[in-house]
Length: 305
Ligand code: GLY
Image 1 (cartoon, rainbow, N blue to C red):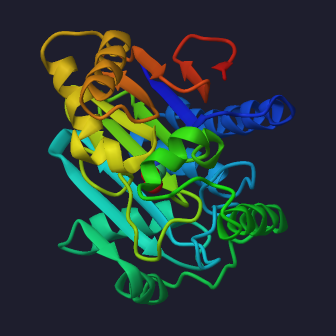
Image 2 (cartoon, helix red, strand yellow):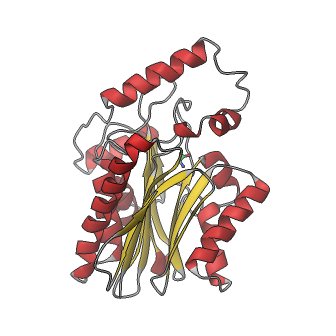
């Protein structure tokens, strides 16, 4: 028995981009499910799935990440291992190809949980990661447009980034996530992101914070997408897995987590969950969230947006 489920971000995905999102999510599920089919681990499967999406410029993770206000890319990523609550994460890391693999090395090669900024980059160098420029021409052009609009005062007052992102959910979509359970019953979750457009340098979102954007326990595994500032405040993925522990199935846990978020912080978000029985939960309060999954016994990948 195994299941792998991925998301490609919540937000407002334009129709002409939908096919690329769906294909990208399916490719990620394929990479992860090949590992699970050959009795591989959930950890290897979620890492492989995320690496595929980090290499796909359609998504806001790795190559194709959104730019900060200053025009740089700072990426966050995290991986969680359910059986013993292990967790590894990086925040604000620059110029590497696969932040998710660096997050895993934080978990496996250090006594820490989260490395940030220059320290994360120094660790990447130590681990042999090569220089990689994740800025694509498309993201640069979007950044120039949004920044110009902001500088021209075309946005009404911007006292709170959150209000801005509520009005422009297209800024948000693109964080990628994967959750899996393997044939040994072990769960894992992984999430990777460039964060949100025009963020201040040094801003860290929910993705690398344990229980906020990424979490796994013996009950299940969860990854989220959306505006991190809200999700961090309610430990979104931990809350969702608490609902599993209280007896809800994966789908009801996902729905309850979004309801809880709506009631307390009202942030745009999406969530995916796999439970210990291999059931999936998929829910979002945004117009779109790309998702795809494969369970043992299914002939075809199921996907939606
Ligand atoms: N959920 C991605 C972020 O807020 O950084």
